[in-house]
Image (cartoon, rainbow, N blue to C red; front, side, top):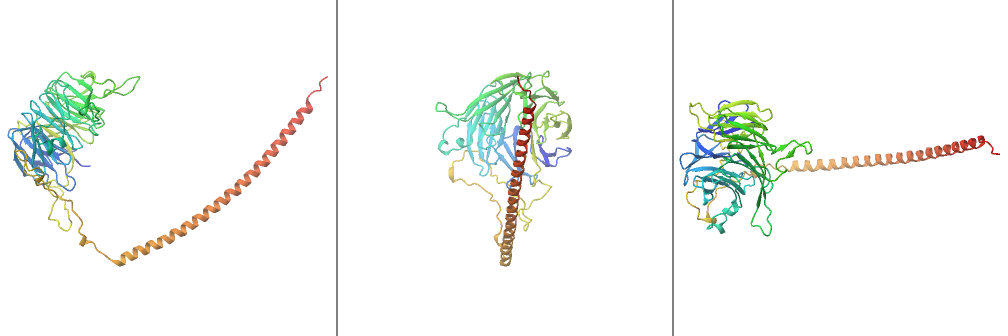
Length: 477
């Protein structure tokens, strides 16, 4: 699989991870805030998109993989501090420095809800893979889990949404949130904070009669001696990388299990609920990137991507912790920090590369661009009467299907001939089975006869030996 690196710095570029060098494609998106870039991959015959919120203006930029010019430039109600889009590109959720959350429907551009979710700035938003829930972190040190269906419910449109659950064990601003694989009730939530800790949570979505909603369990806390900027989780959740705020870019490799003589490879997440584990250079491996780290990501081939404030991206092997290559995002003497990193399979609709045609008879039409309408600045009031743009999947042209009755007749004739041949093979197989069964019966009879002869010989030998022993015994006086 040809995997590309997507990075946001002074612009958004797609890079070849194996070779590095100049970007494969670049989009002139202005520098974005941390966690304020989202990627919509190409799928379902619809082109990919890049959403990025400007760091200094209340603008949201949308680019398509198919051209390097902006698809849309939206003016939003205020400067956005972070955003994310669900896996189906149905909802765009963004946070602001005022602590408000904005929920837009991508296809219609309708602003469904705008509400105060946190007391201070929202720093990170993560959609769950189910597309139904998302998690927010804030400078007020709290983490909230929200339900999309409850937020956009028309029956509750006049009510301020409340989170499904709030996690409040951190004491300083949240810097990163990562979600494990699985449903919300089985996936773990990993969070990092300026309070120098990384916490691991599990969510119990089953409610009881005396509970108002899901509950949470703090599985473990990993304590460091310095603030944590970002984390990257191993897909199997065996270890994680924690980027510190040190100027030298120190990153700790923290295992989520420990070797024990009595219980080998005991998980640190189940040994003691809520247990705190101190992490330092004496008990954990580390990487030094050389400059302050801004963001982390993992590739599908177990490579660690490190984005730095100097605009460089370092690629490390996760097993040997060796530096494989370094990619530069800018030639400027004062580069912009890397604020976003992820990887995607090479898009088939990427500008300047393979051009995909939906219909081989109409090669002038390229892959459809996913519908995105201008995002509203005020809340949608049309309700069910709003217009939503949809792209239906292509259907085959029935008039292009040829019909030849002679081909049908030949097909059924071949089927009939094949059936007769199958019957002949079945008869031969049945005769062979009967012959083998007869041989088995004959061999069984001969075996029984041989066994009877052997038993008779054995009895005669036993009798003869018994008589000889009796004849040689001395006569008692």
